Image (cartoon, rainbow, N blue to C red; front, side, top):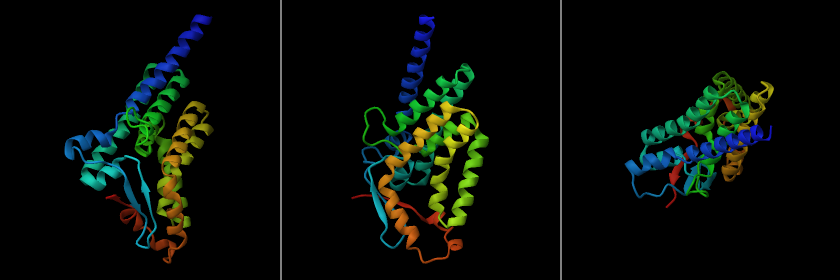
Length: 232
């Protein structure tokens, strides 16, 4: 019995560490090394409107790469980050029926993305990787929580809320679906995302609170804001 428990613990460690190593593969850094070698990807100015509400971030993500190398490069980086969340979780679901292993792989991938090997202080945010995890675990759930977030964003007149809220709703979906390990993984991912982007929330709130436009005219912000600019 002790040997069985020991083996289970080892596989849990393998799942967590393996996920972290895969998560450490930054799509932004991989693409940047090809298209803009030697150009720093941090810090970046995040502009929420034309009224002076902005933040400075030291994270490295596809949006930060896009600000320096264009939307195509940023899109490719985002696809890589989605894939590194999707593939390990999908493989884990295929090769084992142990929900703890699947959850720990997801936790490892998300930790690796936010705290990558060699770049612990300049990791990503986790949004693309969370999408990949959710696509592998429950694509219907991803569609549902994004739809709910869009509805709420419409009601409050804040596209920014729509882009952020689904991250918080995703662990609730898994918890209600009786998948506590995936709820734990995505809950951790949501917390890490909030911590990484904390500096953005105050100017985002000010931007929404001081916006003189009626709520139904703010949807253009999905295409206009936030704007990411290299910080010189």
